[in-house]
Amino acid sequence: MRTVSWKPDGPAVRLIDQRKLPAEVTPIDLDTPEAVAEAIRDMAVRGAPAIGAAAAYALALAAATSQSKDVAGLWLELQTAADLLRAARPTAVNLGWCLDRMLRTAQAILASGLDEVKAALLAEAEKIADEDVAVNQAIGRFGAALLPPNATVIHHCNTGALATVDWGTALGVIRTAHESGQGIYVLVDETRPRLQGARLTAWELQQYGIPFEIIVDGAAGYFLQRGPVAAALVGADRVAANGDVANKIGTYMLALAARDNQVPFYVAVPTTSIDLSVPAGEAIPIELRPPGEVLELAQAGQPVSPPGSHAQNPAFDITPYRLVTAFITEVGVIRPPFETGLSDAVQRAGTG
Ligand code: MRU
Picture 1 (tube, rainbow, N blue to C red):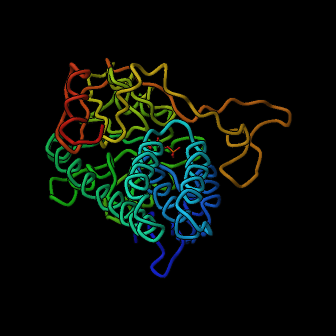
Picture 2: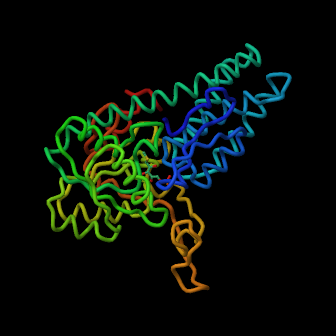
Picture 3: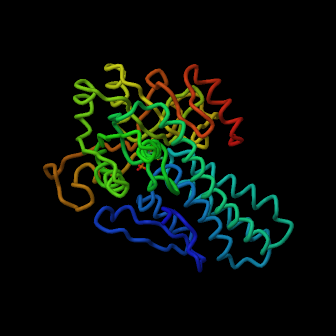
């Protein structure tokens, strides 16, 4: 089952509810764009490519359920839904990229009539989802070729099938390496506070039969120092034009520890996560999430801190480009200097 899809007898967007994993694999069907926006905000669906695809399907849903009698009314509804979805999470650029692509699709066919716009939007959302899977498989092939046989790798957050439509980016590299028989073992950062590593990556690796152990985030330096670790592998929510990387909080510290121990630090990204309009990482908006995610254990509402404690909870951080060994994209591996490499890749992929 794909992480994000169109309910076969729609109109609804079907998601695997990631808040319930690994205890339950529960699909949920959402029948309004508002419900999809809330699912993104509350992280029932998460991971940059997955929230982009969910938002694309949500616009197809807005069209399919529209009561407008003319295309002007439908166009207004689509814009309102896109604004709501765009605001759901600010850091991943895929969200806005998918919404803009959907709006362009609608605009190009608006004069043809209501039914044509509805059909075109659903077809475009399906195309975005299919492309995501193909892109991830290409990333997997390029990335696996960088790893030595029987590599031990450190992975942060969840970048697998659950963070995409299917297959995954950094975890897709791991999966490709495993399936090609080259042998791979994964140290899984637990990824405080939402535990995407301990809950989601561990669950995925178990499904694929890939050997792993979970480590606390603070232990990554210990393992990098003792070695041998062949590579640190992460995804990205947004890559600036200069190669600075916004990714799950803790990525920067992992990159520092990797550099200090001469371990390659690879960022696996679809070119849709490269934002050439942002010159450097400091201009990328960082989402601040509720302090309760830090002050309480997972989502159980069980406090870990003394009552009255305060917390800060940035969801992402910026890893400076100088700590990145290479980007692994669907059009190939990009090594420094990143500025030209990234813009060439976007151009070659046609995703600018
Ligand atoms: O807060 P999340 O779980 O949405 O954060 C996800 C990440 O940071 C991933 O590394 C990133 O989106 C890439 S997923 C292929």
